[in-house]
Image (cartoon, rainbow, N blue to C red):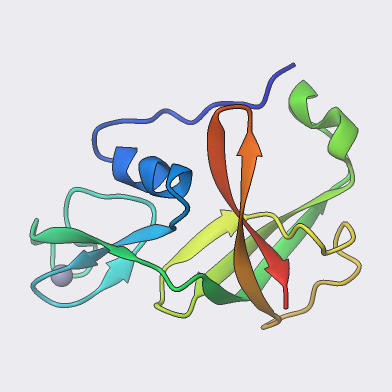
Length: 132
Ligand SMILES: [Zn+2]
């Protein structure tokens, strides 16, 4: 079974195109400065629609994680156990990801510094991170 594909919309396309080009992008409100992921049409803080994409530096910290010991999708059967980790970028936005060198969770710790490592799933570039 192949890797599940995201529903790429005109709203989210810059995020996926950025990864394909080697860069993680987040959205920032041009009115109040708030930053976030995933893509939204309006700022979740002030609700204004003056939104711009910004490049992330690629560094962040682990906020939380879970370890999957059951594959709820056949595409992940050969990966278990694997982590699903919440990373907070240095710029503030958070995203769900995987830690490529976390040894299925055994090396993960709260606030551990991580850096971006873009992975490939077929034609899809995905944002993953590695422990520094
Ligand atoms: Zn705002």
